[in-house]
Image 1 (cartoon, helix red, strand yellow):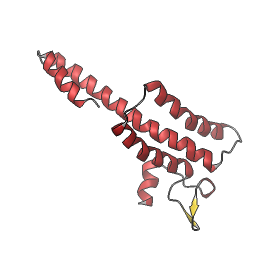
Image 2 (cartoon, rainbow, N blue to C red; image 1 turned 90 degrees about the vertical axis):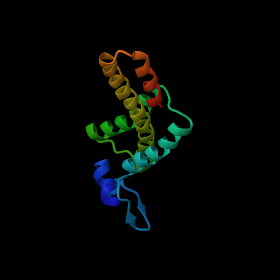
Image 3 (cartoon, rainbow, N blue to C red; image 1 turned 30 degrees about the horizontal axis):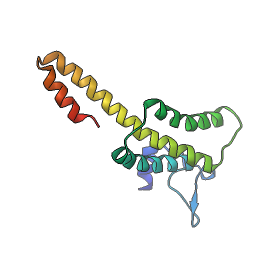
Length: 132
């Protein structure tokens, strides 16, 4: 499972940026651990509560991007708790983003089908069934 997680997240698994439990390093770094927690948390949020406006999704993604670029471009090093926190925010936002991506793909597909099929109302009814 650890190898799958490293590949899935593209994780560097640096020991100085990872958590340890009982002397063993987590299979993914602190930021990727946060993303995993965020994704696993975001799925039930979308199912039971819904998703926010797109600008909120973008705002939730900014802290991780800013922290990562700040570390890349300056000598600044964030701590693992900050990496975990920004990863969680990003992971939750990623699930919301996937919902928006799904909705956009369905809308484009329905628009294309409307160009071919004359019964636009039927396409609209089917379109509504695919929307979350």
